[in-house]
Length: 255
Image (tube, rainbow, N blue to C red):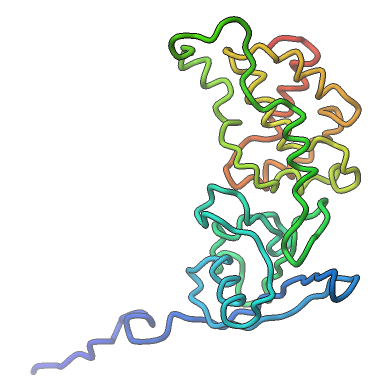
């Protein structure tokens, strides 16, 4: 006896023709200083593939539902760092956060990162953050004549500071730090990470100067080792470890 099988039998819902889309609610903290002094939460219900990213959802909301929604983004591939925001209470890059990974069965909260002044919706004033970055001299300092060839460095010397070269200045680490929340004068983890990158570079000659900058009352000693910064880093940098190495260099003057 010949049995005819249903071609859809045993196949998943997508293969059987079911829609891959789900209905997700995005609860966004809105703030417009031209409209009101206080921020408010606003819900947006959208149909979206859970394999898409939070950034895709924000685009859909802005382009199809409310063009006044304001947020930063540029490369959309986790390199520029411009779309850092708090998603379900944690600092993340919207372009690297898949909707399926953040429990879309419940409202997904999206708000601006903490510790920096909110200008509008999800956009904050980054100037204090970048000023701290500039203050630690994030560039190679050398003396003498300009070389006629590249400055050579061993693989071992390069590995010494390899981790801290990965920083994309998204501010996710700094804006996750409780010390920074309470005192915006603190340099913050990102500035210390970028100081570390040059302090431990064998070609650089300004390590002592950077250490003195970070020896300030608002410098590296303010760190309370909560590991929030390490957890928040989208690049996987061991931020707390870098901060501890800078502290150790300040004490031993060996770097």
